[in-house]
Image 1 (tube, one colour):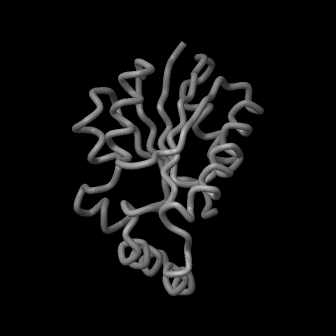
Image 2 (cartoon, rainbow, N blue to C red):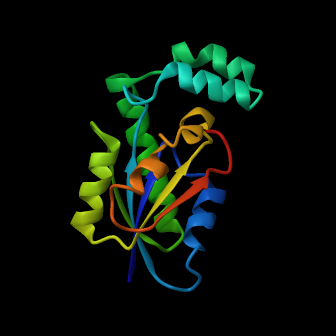
Length: 157
């Protein structure tokens, strides 16, 4: 069985589930999901710049009102549960956990723990971080020792 670590920042949509579950054709894939709720790693200013770059001015103005850190944990737990339920409904083996501290350290640890064959980073576009190669996928490529695939989620949650 192929083992994939799936790193996400919000609940998977049905399109996201179809996308990741069909990447390897008929091969059986076990997913280990890491979800990073908004926290200290997600800089409000960078998120606002990304919103503006996407033409979502109203979203940029609301960044200050979005829960972060411990306040974001219940929302993160719910998003993880929704994602795992969707992967199970698609007939895939899946487990998951929230990232508590440093996402790339958690990713590296999980890859080693489960003997992952690959990492899939599925996020919204983060233009500033991507330009400077500071996004999760760019940084993970130098840290985890397995192929890292970067995909953009199909819709904003």
